[in-house]
Length: 143
Length: 143
DNA sequence: TTACGTGCAAAATATTTGCAAGAAG
DNA sequence: CTTCTTGCAAATATTTTGCACGTAA
Image (cartoon, rainbow over all chains, first blue to last red; front, top):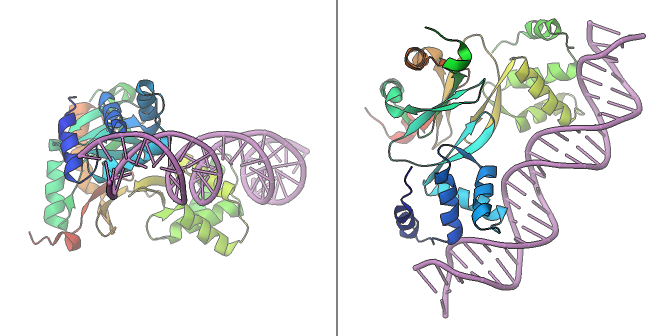
């Protein structure tokens, strides 16, 4: 996952905010996790690089980045997780048994979105949908 | 929403647990909310009827009822909410703008479930899926 | 230089736990 | 009776806040 830090910098500055080392580190920390990252994990990564970033700053920064739509949030098996917001939305299959997380292309949901739009006039904003179930490995599924 | 308390009683006793007044009150409180209820709301309702039920009991009971699959949980715009588990699953459309919550029949998701099962061997357990977006009223949608 | 951001520590919230007393079955 | 449950209060955990100092632009 490439980390277009310059883009982030621009998008932050465009809104009249500053790009601080703390914000960079936190963005890095989220990017490095190849998928979802918890608050705890973000703190760990960030503090490995710069020992003294305050937790309060992490809380404030995550809220800040969410407001700017640079970061999205979801809840996976009871844990709040963060992820870099991407151009093309994607979603996740989470196995209730082994906890495995698999990505799911947005196209899988386009039909559903279309129906909801037509029948309910509801415009889905599925940037980060989490679908729970049992994966192939755990289900002993063979058809 | 009918409250088949006897059924709950049976299902609780079947597992070797007891049906206490506290558990009844908490089940009532969840049923009375015509849709999702927060922890806070449950406490309020419960304490309106029996002034002195401890919060710790509510926490423990909700966990207990979840384990028995009598109650389901979801996260709606950052709030953990509880709902009575129904025979036929149903889901929710939540408007990010006005907060309105609309129910969605499970049939809307059957196609998606089928595809995930076929292509991923993933068995969905969508007891309480929350889809965020913008509702007709807020979207100014007309087609 | 001038707000915007951060660190810090304390406050406010939220959740969990141990244990003795109470009660359902 | 038996042991599952509750209440209570204390222990933890989590998140928020105020304020003075630091710093990006």
